Structure formats: structure tokens, C-alpha cells
Length: 247
Image 1 (spheres, rainbow, N blue to C red):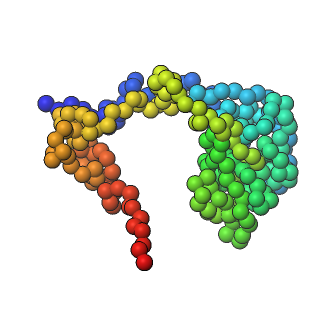
Image 2 (cartoon, rainbow, N blue to C red):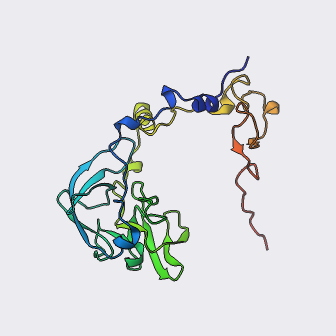
Image 3 (tube, rainbow, N blue to C red):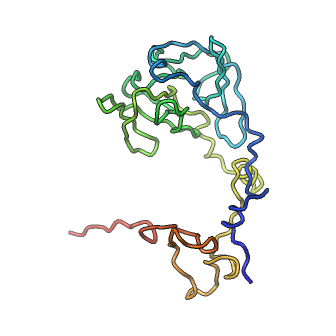
């Protein structure tokens, strides 16, 4: 008889698939100030502490503003405890300051930027990530994202000047399987993962040692939970290969 596949067990929930969210410090978001108001203010703050957040590659910085507001934000490189930062459209473009994109000089490296005014920060938040301010247009501010793609973003969206810290974190090898296990556990990922091809047919739709019994990896949106694995509703079976043009 068949068994429940990993996708079904994850959907049911359980200890193996549950992230340790109770250990996390706080969400990293900008303070809830009206976007148009933040475009014209200059609010002074101090980095009170740098704390580790489980499951996150970069530390969090606790910032206390002069009006008593506290904020946890993702830490850019070269900031330190006791450093003064400025929040608002009148702030200078110095590392650590939080400025609306419409007030950023062209060519500035920014991180933790909002895609919509007031969403708290969505892009360029991982270790070593940054985006580049390309230019200002009537459509909004043109940004080059970490993927290399460019897009227009509203001028009222906030961003932090600088590059996210811990840029060389992923260059160090794990060396031990236990270290990789604890990293995945903090992120709520199941580890280690056995591929479906290595399983028996009773456990996974792809499982079989017979090559003739293997099926395609694409499946439909309406497939039942025991079959909904692989490339769901994919237009093609894999990545298209570029053919060399021979003259």
C-alpha cells in the first residue's frame, strides 16, 4: 500500500515542518509613519543594540528615535552601536540613514527597500544584497534589483543606504551535516530531503528503479494531493536551452 508523500505530510503540519518562530526577536519593519509625512521630516535616531535573530543571516539593529519610537531593522555594513542615523526625506545619503527613494541621489546603493509605500521593506534584505538607484523619472524611481532586473518604484518608498551586512556568510562551507540541519531547522525547512526518484513507487509518484516506469515532472493545478508534485502547471518540462546559431 502507498504512504503519504512529503507534500501531504507538510500540508497537515507537524513538528518536523514547523519553524521555530517563537525564538525570533521581532519583524524588521520601518516605523508606521505616513509616506507623505516621511518625505518632509528629519527624525534623529540612535542604534541601541545589534541582536542575532534565528533563521536570519544578518543581525538586527534596534534603533531608538528621539520621539521614543523603537524599530528593528536589518543591519547594513559598517554601522555600529551608538551610531546616529537619520530618518526622512531631509536626511543625507549616508550609510544607515533611511530615506525615501525620491530623495536618493542617482547611483546610491540601497537595501531593505519598499515596493509599495508603507509595506515595511520587501527587497534586498538578505546577506550582502543591495539595489542601485538608476534614475528619477515621472513614472517613479528606477531601481536595479539584486537579480539585475530594473523596475520603477514609487518615490515615497523607503530604503536604507548601504549594503546588507554578512556578505561573505554563504562562502564558508558547512563542513558538518549537523550545522546544515540546524540552519534549516531555524528556517522551518525539512532537511535532509530525499528526491522522489530515489524512493519506491509506493511512496512517491516518481519513485521507481525502472526507467521505463518514470513519468514526466509536469502536473496540473487540479491534480490530487498524492500526485501534485514536480513542476505544477508548467508550460514546459524544464529550462529551455539556447541553441547556437551557426552561420
